[in-house]
Length: 288
Image (tube, rainbow, N blue to C red; front, top):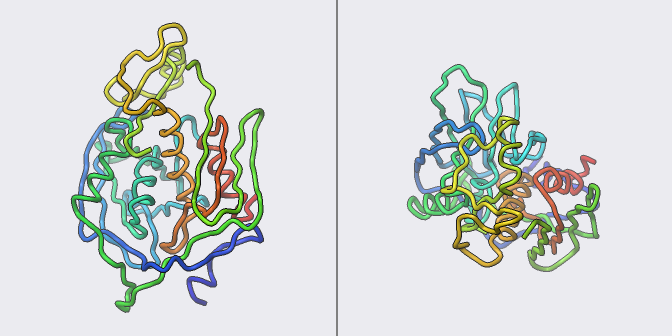
Protein backbone atom coordinates (compact mmCIF):
# COMPACT_ATOMS: atom_id res chain seq x y z
CA UNK A 1 0.00 0.00 0.00
CA UNK A 2 1.42 3.42 -0.96
CA UNK A 3 1.89 6.22 1.55
CA UNK A 4 -0.83 8.19 -0.25
CA UNK A 5 -3.34 5.37 0.19
CA UNK A 6 -2.29 5.02 3.84
CA UNK A 7 -3.15 8.64 4.66
CA UNK A 8 -5.72 8.86 7.41
CA UNK A 9 -8.69 10.74 6.09
CA UNK A 10 -12.41 11.37 6.52
CA UNK A 11 -15.24 12.82 4.46
CA UNK A 12 -14.20 16.20 5.83
CA UNK A 13 -10.78 16.20 4.15
CA UNK A 14 -9.33 15.43 0.71
CA UNK A 15 -5.58 15.12 0.12
CA UNK A 16 -4.44 16.98 -2.99
CA UNK A 17 -1.03 17.43 -4.66
CA UNK A 18 0.80 20.68 -3.88
CA UNK A 19 3.05 20.57 -6.96
CA UNK A 20 6.09 20.52 -4.65
CA UNK A 21 8.43 17.77 -3.47
CA UNK A 22 8.83 16.88 0.19
CA UNK A 23 11.81 18.59 1.83
CA UNK A 24 14.14 18.04 4.74
CA UNK A 25 17.09 19.86 6.30
CA UNK A 26 20.38 20.04 4.39
CA UNK A 27 22.26 19.06 7.56
CA UNK A 28 22.04 19.07 11.34
CA UNK A 29 21.69 22.16 13.50
CA UNK A 30 21.64 22.41 17.30
CA UNK A 31 20.13 24.80 19.81
CA UNK A 32 20.28 24.82 23.64
CA UNK A 33 18.18 26.77 26.11
CA UNK A 34 15.94 26.89 29.16
CA UNK A 35 12.42 25.43 29.06
CA UNK A 36 9.39 27.54 29.99
CA UNK A 37 7.55 25.27 32.42
CA UNK A 38 10.21 22.97 33.93
CA UNK A 39 12.90 25.66 33.98
CA UNK A 40 15.43 23.00 32.95
CA UNK A 41 18.02 23.33 30.20
CA UNK A 42 17.63 21.07 27.17
CA UNK A 43 19.50 20.61 23.91
CA UNK A 44 17.65 20.09 20.63
CA UNK A 45 19.35 18.84 17.47
CA UNK A 46 17.42 19.07 14.19
CA UNK A 47 18.53 16.49 11.62
CA UNK A 48 17.52 15.37 8.12
CA UNK A 49 15.03 12.52 7.71
CA UNK A 50 13.95 10.37 4.78
CA UNK A 51 10.98 11.32 2.64
CA UNK A 52 7.80 9.89 4.08
CA UNK A 53 9.14 9.75 7.65
CA UNK A 54 7.64 13.08 8.64
CA UNK A 55 8.70 14.92 11.77
CA UNK A 56 9.47 12.92 14.90
CA UNK A 57 11.26 13.28 18.22
CA UNK A 58 14.14 11.04 19.28
CA UNK A 59 14.38 10.97 23.08
CA UNK A 60 16.34 8.35 25.00
CA UNK A 61 16.32 6.12 21.86
CA UNK A 62 12.52 6.36 21.75
CA UNK A 63 10.76 7.68 18.64
CA UNK A 64 7.74 9.91 19.26
CA UNK A 65 6.00 11.04 16.04
CA UNK A 66 4.83 14.66 15.86
CA UNK A 67 1.29 13.43 15.35
CA UNK A 68 -2.07 14.20 16.90
CA UNK A 69 -2.26 10.48 17.70
CA UNK A 70 0.20 11.15 20.52
CA UNK A 71 -0.95 14.63 21.59
CA UNK A 72 -1.84 14.87 25.28
CA UNK A 73 -3.90 17.45 27.11
CA UNK A 74 -1.61 19.51 29.34
CA UNK A 75 -1.83 23.02 30.79
CA UNK A 76 -0.51 25.91 28.69
CA UNK A 77 1.39 23.83 26.13
CA UNK A 78 1.19 20.92 23.71
CA UNK A 79 2.69 17.64 24.88
CA UNK A 80 3.48 14.48 22.93
CA UNK A 81 3.51 11.19 24.83
CA UNK A 82 4.42 7.65 23.80
CA UNK A 83 5.56 4.63 25.79
CA UNK A 84 5.80 6.62 29.02
CA UNK A 85 8.08 9.31 27.50
CA UNK A 86 6.86 12.90 27.17
CA UNK A 87 8.00 15.91 25.16
CA UNK A 88 6.46 19.20 26.29
CA UNK A 89 6.01 22.60 24.65
CA UNK A 90 6.52 21.38 21.08
CA UNK A 91 4.26 23.97 19.42
CA UNK A 92 6.72 26.77 18.58
CA UNK A 93 9.31 24.42 17.07
CA UNK A 94 6.69 22.52 15.05
CA UNK A 95 5.13 25.79 13.87
CA UNK A 96 8.50 26.92 12.51
CA UNK A 97 9.17 23.59 10.79
CA UNK A 98 5.68 23.52 9.21
CA UNK A 99 5.96 27.12 8.01
CA UNK A 100 9.50 26.68 6.68
CA UNK A 101 8.59 23.53 4.74
CA UNK A 102 10.70 21.11 6.79
CA UNK A 103 8.43 18.16 6.06
CA UNK A 104 10.73 15.41 7.33
CA UNK A 105 12.92 15.92 10.39
CA UNK A 106 14.45 13.89 13.20
CA UNK A 107 14.35 16.03 16.35
CA UNK A 108 16.82 14.79 18.94
CA UNK A 109 16.36 16.15 22.44
CA UNK A 110 18.49 15.76 25.57
CA UNK A 111 18.21 17.14 29.08
CA UNK A 112 20.50 17.09 32.10
CA UNK A 113 18.56 14.43 34.04
CA UNK A 114 19.60 11.14 32.46
CA UNK A 115 16.86 9.26 34.36
CA UNK A 116 13.95 11.51 33.42
CA UNK A 117 11.25 10.33 31.01
CA UNK A 118 10.20 13.95 30.39
CA UNK A 119 11.83 16.60 28.25
CA UNK A 120 10.78 20.10 27.24
CA UNK A 121 11.68 22.21 24.21
CA UNK A 122 13.56 25.45 25.04
CA UNK A 123 11.45 28.62 25.05
CA UNK A 124 14.16 31.15 24.00
CA UNK A 125 12.44 34.56 23.65
CA UNK A 126 8.93 33.04 23.69
CA UNK A 127 8.52 33.07 19.89
CA UNK A 128 9.63 30.81 17.02
CA UNK A 129 12.35 33.24 15.90
CA UNK A 130 15.27 31.04 17.05
CA UNK A 131 13.90 27.97 15.26
CA UNK A 132 13.36 29.87 12.01
CA UNK A 133 16.93 31.15 12.27
CA UNK A 134 18.19 27.58 12.78
CA UNK A 135 16.41 26.37 9.64
CA UNK A 136 17.73 29.32 7.62
CA UNK A 137 21.24 28.64 8.94
CA UNK A 138 21.38 25.03 7.69
CA UNK A 139 19.05 25.29 4.68
CA UNK A 140 16.74 22.78 2.98
CA UNK A 141 17.06 20.04 0.38
CA UNK A 142 14.69 17.70 -1.42
CA UNK A 143 13.99 14.67 0.76
CA UNK A 144 14.47 11.19 -0.72
CA UNK A 145 13.33 7.81 0.56
CA UNK A 146 15.52 4.76 1.25
CA UNK A 147 15.62 4.04 -2.49
CA UNK A 148 16.78 7.57 -3.30
CA UNK A 149 13.43 8.60 -4.75
CA UNK A 150 11.68 11.91 -4.07
CA UNK A 151 8.02 12.17 -3.06
CA UNK A 152 5.41 14.72 -4.06
CA UNK A 153 3.97 16.62 -1.12
CA UNK A 154 0.19 16.56 -0.67
CA UNK A 155 -1.97 18.82 1.49
CA UNK A 156 -5.27 18.29 3.34
CA UNK A 157 -8.14 20.35 1.92
CA UNK A 158 -11.25 20.85 4.05
CA UNK A 159 -14.39 19.78 2.14
CA UNK A 160 -17.13 21.12 4.42
CA UNK A 161 -17.43 23.32 7.53
CA UNK A 162 -16.26 21.72 10.76
CA UNK A 163 -15.87 23.11 14.26
CA UNK A 164 -15.04 22.24 17.86
CA UNK A 165 -16.00 24.29 20.89
CA UNK A 166 -15.92 24.49 24.68
CA UNK A 167 -17.96 27.04 26.60
CA UNK A 168 -17.58 30.33 24.65
CA UNK A 169 -14.40 29.24 22.84
CA UNK A 170 -14.30 27.68 19.39
CA UNK A 171 -12.11 26.77 16.43
CA UNK A 172 -13.72 26.24 13.02
CA UNK A 173 -12.50 25.43 9.51
CA UNK A 174 -14.30 26.34 6.29
CA UNK A 175 -13.50 25.28 2.71
CA UNK A 176 -11.11 27.71 1.02
CA UNK A 177 -8.73 27.67 -1.94
CA UNK A 178 -5.99 29.13 0.26
CA UNK A 179 -4.92 28.87 3.89
CA UNK A 180 -6.47 31.76 5.81
CA UNK A 181 -6.49 32.25 9.58
CA UNK A 182 -8.68 34.60 11.60
CA UNK A 183 -8.08 34.64 15.37
CA UNK A 184 -9.81 36.55 18.14
CA UNK A 185 -8.89 36.72 21.81
CA UNK A 186 -10.50 38.29 24.86
CA UNK A 187 -8.07 39.25 27.61
CA UNK A 188 -7.69 42.37 29.80
CA UNK A 189 -6.33 44.05 27.22
CA UNK A 190 3.32 34.71 14.33
CA UNK A 191 7.06 33.74 14.19
CA UNK A 192 8.32 36.81 16.03
CA UNK A 193 5.26 36.94 18.34
CA UNK A 194 6.05 35.94 21.90
CA UNK A 195 4.31 33.91 24.59
CA UNK A 196 2.15 36.10 26.81
CA UNK A 197 0.43 35.80 30.17
CA UNK A 198 -1.69 37.74 32.65
CA UNK A 199 0.27 39.12 35.61
CA UNK A 200 -2.50 38.34 38.10
CA UNK A 201 -2.33 34.63 37.09
CA UNK A 202 1.45 34.22 37.46
CA UNK A 203 1.42 33.12 41.12
CA UNK A 204 -1.35 30.60 40.45
CA UNK A 205 0.61 29.10 37.54
CA UNK A 206 3.82 28.90 39.57
CA UNK A 207 1.97 27.18 42.41
CA UNK A 208 0.76 24.63 39.86
CA UNK A 209 4.37 23.84 38.95
CA UNK A 210 4.26 25.75 35.65
CA UNK A 211 6.34 28.56 34.06
CA UNK A 212 9.38 27.82 36.27
CA UNK A 213 11.52 29.10 33.43
CA UNK A 214 9.29 32.07 32.61
CA UNK A 215 10.67 35.61 32.75
CA UNK A 216 10.23 39.05 31.22
CA UNK A 217 12.85 37.96 28.65
CA UNK A 218 10.74 35.15 27.17
CA UNK A 219 7.16 36.35 27.63
CA UNK A 220 5.13 39.53 27.48
CA UNK A 221 3.15 40.17 30.63
CA UNK A 222 -0.09 42.13 30.92
CA UNK A 223 -1.61 43.43 34.15
CA UNK A 224 -5.35 44.02 34.38
CA UNK A 225 -4.69 47.33 36.13
CA UNK A 226 -1.34 48.50 34.68
CA UNK A 227 -1.37 47.18 31.12
CA UNK A 228 1.76 45.74 29.49
CA UNK A 229 4.57 45.45 32.03
CA UNK A 230 7.43 44.91 29.55
CA UNK A 231 6.75 46.90 26.38
CA UNK A 232 7.30 47.51 23.58
CA UNK A 233 5.34 44.82 21.75
CA UNK A 234 6.87 43.49 18.53
CA UNK A 235 3.48 44.16 16.88
CA UNK A 236 0.36 45.96 18.06
CA UNK A 237 -1.54 42.66 17.74
CA UNK A 238 1.30 40.44 19.05
CA UNK A 239 -0.92 38.31 21.36
CA UNK A 240 -3.19 37.37 18.43
CA UNK A 241 -0.18 36.66 16.25
CA UNK A 242 1.19 34.36 18.93
CA UNK A 243 -2.08 32.44 19.10
CA UNK A 244 -1.78 31.90 15.32
CA UNK A 245 1.80 30.69 15.85
CA UNK A 246 0.49 28.15 18.38
CA UNK A 247 -2.38 27.16 16.07
CA UNK A 248 -0.01 26.39 13.17
CA UNK A 249 2.20 24.32 15.47
CA UNK A 250 -0.73 22.38 16.89
CA UNK A 251 -2.36 21.76 13.50
CA UNK A 252 0.99 20.61 12.11
CA UNK A 253 0.25 17.46 14.14
CA UNK A 254 -2.23 16.61 11.36
CA UNK A 255 0.77 15.96 9.07
CA UNK A 256 1.28 12.39 7.86
CA UNK A 257 4.17 10.75 5.99
CA UNK A 258 5.98 14.04 5.43
CA UNK A 259 2.99 15.83 3.94
CA UNK A 260 1.48 19.19 4.87
CA UNK A 261 -0.19 19.34 8.26
CA UNK A 262 -1.85 22.76 8.19
CA UNK A 263 -5.23 22.28 6.47
CA UNK A 264 -6.03 24.31 3.38
CA UNK A 265 -9.06 26.12 4.80
CA UNK A 266 -10.22 29.37 6.32
CA UNK A 267 -9.65 28.68 10.01
CA UNK A 268 -11.51 30.93 12.42
CA UNK A 269 -10.83 30.78 16.14
CA UNK A 270 -12.02 32.69 19.17
CA UNK A 271 -10.43 32.24 22.60
CA UNK A 272 -8.90 28.99 21.39
CA UNK A 273 -6.05 27.10 22.98
CA UNK A 274 -3.85 24.05 22.55
CA UNK A 275 -6.57 21.57 23.51
CA UNK A 276 -9.11 23.00 21.04
CA UNK A 277 -6.50 23.21 18.29
CA UNK A 278 -5.70 19.51 18.74
CA UNK A 279 -9.41 18.67 18.88
CA UNK A 280 -9.91 20.28 15.46
CA UNK A 281 -7.14 18.08 14.04
CA UNK A 282 -8.78 15.02 15.62
CA UNK A 283 -12.16 16.03 14.24
CA UNK A 284 -10.76 16.43 10.73
CA UNK A 285 -9.11 13.05 10.85
CA UNK A 286 -12.25 11.35 12.16
CA UNK A 287 -10.92 10.61 15.66
CA UNK A 288 -13.86 12.37 17.33
